[in-house]
Picture 1 (cartoon, rainbow, N blue to C red):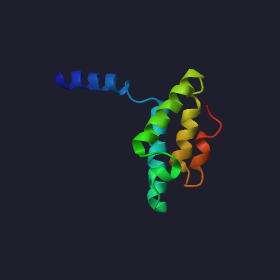
Picture 2: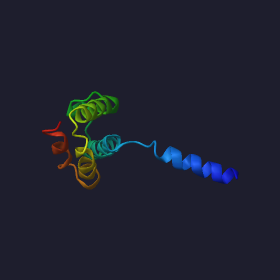
Picture 3: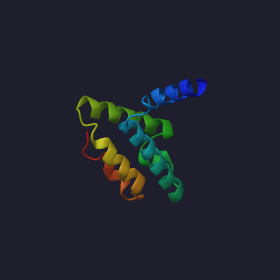
Picture 4: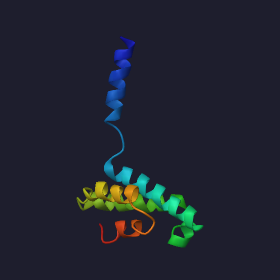
Length: 97
């Protein structure tokens, strides 16, 4: 019985996971950090003071996307960050929202 309750709890909590735009921000952070490390650059070189500043930017971007009902762009952007390379990711935020 306890295993059943734990399974139900886990299934319920799974529905509370991050949304597509939060996942996009995670993928973006990972890609940019990897590129910066590989190029010997810092977040400052891209205009952000640090990774927290980048996360704040991404959070603001997603709030604007939601307000404009453009959050459907997030899955495609996630793919760009996950499958892309260090030259492909800068265009992901260009022109949206």
